[in-house]
Amino acid sequence: MHKRKITNPLNVEFKPFDRYGSAIEKMSWHEISYDSETGFGTFVLKLNPGAQSIPHEHTGFEEFLVLQGEMIDSDNTVFKKGDFVTFKPGSCHSSSSPKGCLLLVFMRGINRAL
Image 1 (cartoon, one colour):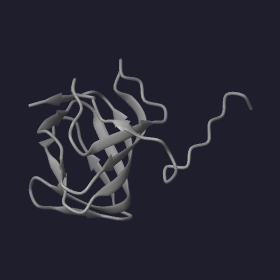
Image 2 (cartoon, helix red, strand yellow):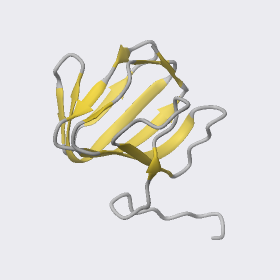
Image 3 (cartoon, helix red, strand yellow):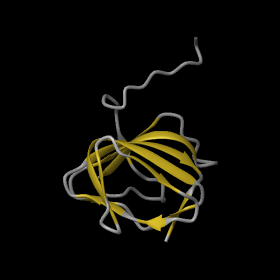
C-alpha cells in the first residue's frame, strides 16, 4: 500500500495560507491532496482567532466540515463544529472566525479573489 496516505487533521503541521498569492494573516493550511494547478483536492484549514478571509468567488464546488470552533460567513451565518457546508460554483463571500476554527476542505475549482 505504498500509494496510501493517512492524515489525522487534528495533528498536522501548518504553513501560511497563500492560495491568493500572498499569505493571509492568521490563516494556515496543510495540503492533503490539493493540486494548485486545477484547484482540486483536500486540505486542512486553520483560522486563528480574529482571522478574516478575503472576498472571493467559487469557480467550482467548495465544501468543508467544521472540525473545531466556529466560522461566521459574510451574511452572518454561523458554521459550528460538525456542520458540513457546500458553496456552489458562482457563490461569493468572505468568512471570519473571532474564536478560531479548524476546517477539512474539499475543493473542486480555483477560487477567484474579488
